[in-house]
Length: 361
Image 1 (tube, rainbow, N blue to C red):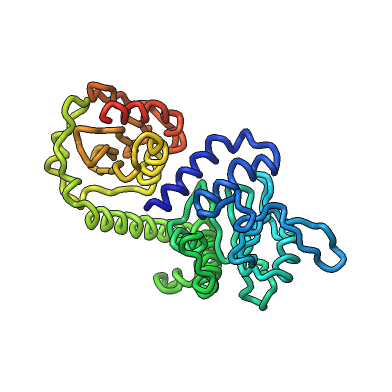
Image 2: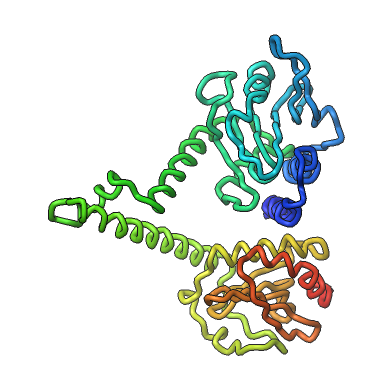
């Protein structure tokens, strides 16, 4: 969880400062170096560990530099090429990575713009960097499945063989997920026919195919939502089942009577609520240990507490309605609800959230 918090903290910085970054150099200083040091755990000020502007002459190409080389026992392990934040990461941006990968001992290379990180290896041909990444990380949309693999690149747990062994599966699973996502939003004829032919006995005319295209899209979307809700519900029940039946917060506004009698199966924790929870943890960790920040979901709101104590509310996320609100508490534990349009708006209340935590410490 501590590793995820480091990612979330850097993600918060990208959200807040990304718009102010105008150059590649600023991107490296603001986001890439913290990723190397804070997230991966390498000393960016030790040239035997992290070498900036790494030079390796290749054929007739003399004096070309790669932005960073991460070293271990004098051998290059990871190569990193950077672009300005917001700049798209096309494979033609990685020409130097291709050349350096071939002539160094590196098995991993990274192409990044400070927000998105694309990880490459040599699955297709030995010592030749693949054209497609085996792993992608977007700090503003962190895929939980990428986190365990990313930890293998950290200094304390660096395991290149384990990474390479898992890279093939990661690469193809990632590509299949993109295809599935595309089919969910706009299913192609072949995809639609698979389902339509099994539930519809008539001829699959053009009109029928068009009808089933929309039906298939809806069915797949509903199925995925059901799977997500079931998983979240199971996770919540397994991690902290008793916290779902907590008594109301003393002195806070709103009626919490229903919280005492809620049954677990009526509570659905959404991905948006969990994202809000991780944002709050990242924002207040500067004033309190992140391990002390705990979430409790109820039917009426998603609560975030200090020390798992319902008498120490930090905030409430009211996301189960068309207009979302964040509820902020004052020193008397009175809640004031503020309308927000998305979870990103939580960052606007960072100072007030830290102030609330200060009431209890």
